Image (tube, rainbow, N blue to C red; front, side, top):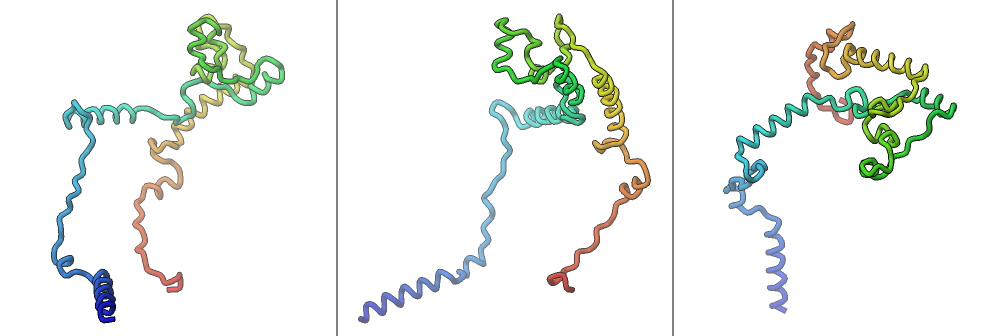
Length: 189
């Protein structure tokens, strides 16, 4: 009976000591062993890597990724497409599997590849020797509006590159100091 009591007492003392703070734990602060390093490709010095990254960043900053919509192909309006579809002048364009290989082998003509897939123009004006498709009145109106949209987008400043104009411009340029945060207890005080 005595052995069981001593064993239980030892277990209880060890269990309690697990939840206490060791005095040496507070007195000694260990320095951090974490060291952060940048990835540098093998065969390059850190200076060469920094120059390459700066060059890539500069090249990317000059690009206008989709600022005015898709840039890879010249599209037409949905209205003009539907008008030609109803007249039977055009059809739905489905992607062609392995189009580049089929064009190289001569099994299909370049104009048989949908313009969005080949990165061209809907009227086949990008393909030498191909018959150019006719523009209807809706296409001509759309082209005029497209140029207007591009010039308007630059003047409105949606990209943030141009300064704002109009009645709210001065307020937008003023720096408003944020209100000091006050602590509230459930929104009551």
